[in-house]
Image 1 (spheres, protein in one colour):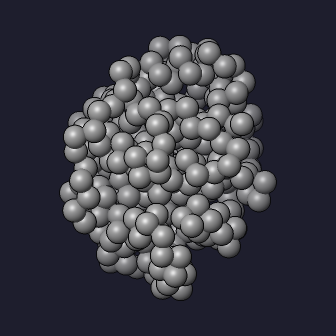
Image 2 (tube, helix red, strand yellow):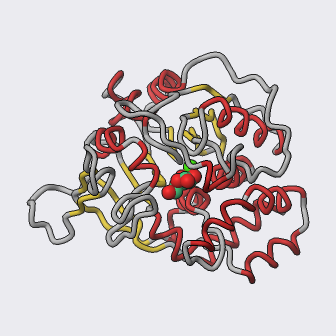
Length: 307
Ligand code: BDR
Ligand code: CA
């Protein structure tokens, strides 16, 4: 069994990514650690607990950071809905998280099994940066860190011209993680909009599956679908699910190892990636950036998980 820990600001596309991992044969999800981002912390915790229950699993859900390291929380409820889950009336309250704090759970899980844990980070990197600051030795002990974040080699951003939401929301955390020496693999928003858009055809393919999980995936995306089409996409895109697909099956990805920095502070550079594409800095690559993930492969994995 491969062993995953998922860090998530659970909203619509995070939820679908979690379903993919929980239903993947050969993968055991040790824990979900929750961070504020798309929605507030308590809502994200309840959303994650709902998904675990929907999948009939017992995966523990741990409460993490309620706000970024050095900034106020700025959410994305206009993108994913007030409840983050498409505002379609799901019962998203009353479930109880496990005892323990997100960053501690990340540290303890990695250090208890050196070389065995893959972290999949689907939200702002606050919990992971906090874990690293507390125990820098996790950088050598973690097997893989797959991050949905950033803009790949060529952009564009989805909250500013240059920045993607997860890196923008907690730019300082993203900068700390990027410089940490962890074995990082970044799946940016560019990959989501090139390979993970739910076009009309894909929408109908999913409708034809007709299972409760397929209906769930449609319902949670109803607000984000509207938003995505308002910015010119052919449907809603699925950044966290395609990052999860890469975590589950990296064999079909194209990647390039590059020296990367994430820019901090405010202004247009907030959360943007500086990528040395030609080796001008002379620095070694610190991030494997996914530059292509085949769309057909992604949708086949996704639809398989929803059956
Ligand atoms: C990222 O931000 C959130 O809206 C999504 O869940 C995803 O993690 C995309 O920029
Ligand atoms: Ca997310």
